[in-house]
Image (tube, rainbow over all chains, first blue to last red):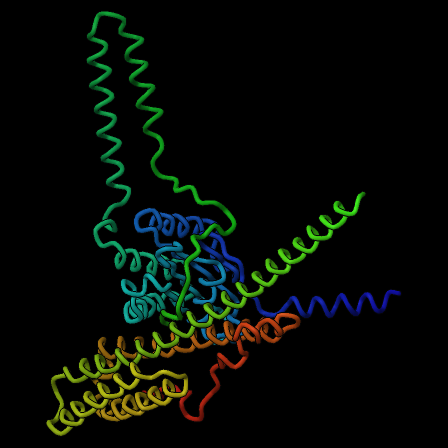
Length: 231
Length: 199
């Protein structure tokens, strides 16, 4: 009774262990375990910001090996299997690093983003990042790649950062202060009006930042055509 | 139940059966059409990948030609290669079958190899940013061709499984969907070797 059951169990496990491309989530997938949680969170935020500014979905993947498949092809298969990139734009990118089996990386590009991120560009970006990866500075390598990609996609927006946000908050604070002062000079019912103004601005102002990404997949359904370069 | 009632029931039952049969056959037909169109779409993408390579290589030759320090003889050879590449580019555009595509593609590979032989003699060209970019683009075209061919083969596989499976195979024959309509890419002797870029 037991032997046949075991036999079928083993056979079915063998069948299901055929190479399937891993399911990815937004935006960092450290399958090789080379990044720390802090680094993952940081890179995630960088990629989320790129998505907010350009709608392009840049996904970082580290794997132990690519199961004998060429790295660029592996990256493209990941894009297709997970539907990375918006469906109407096909603007998905996978930045891949493989630890074994010819240790190296690749940047795979979706069909629609190939014009902005052509093979020569991603090859250059990859080669620039390679020195970090060779020294096992994975975070620095991915960070450089992401930053370079961001510059290629949106040269204007790439200059905006936390400093701009700080100026915005200072400006808001000044406006609130002026309104409160004005209202307190008003003799009819000062307290109600100031607290009302203060409260409405406060509740409206706290919404920026935090790009709200859904966990577990949730990509746009984009596709790939085999493009990209290895490094 | 009286006789008229019974007859009506029988007619109703027959009509119901006919309608169901038509719906079922319609479903099978639509499935075949969908599969056929999928393969057609994949084929277009393969042609597109080959065309991309054919369009890119003449441009890359132009880039190489722009290098300042050639001897006159070398420059003449490069100009000649450029016009050869242009002719093959047209050949790829005119190709209608997989065999023609692959034949045109190997011609292009020949042009590329001859170019690389010339470039061998100029080490500072080989090390330049432009040339590294050229390498990336060349590798990229080969990758795309392989990717689209693999996708095409998968689409053909799905089509053939549909057309040859029981009981769809009877209907497929009737509707004119033959299993031989699409052929997968096979490795043609020599055409598969990517340009060997030796450095």
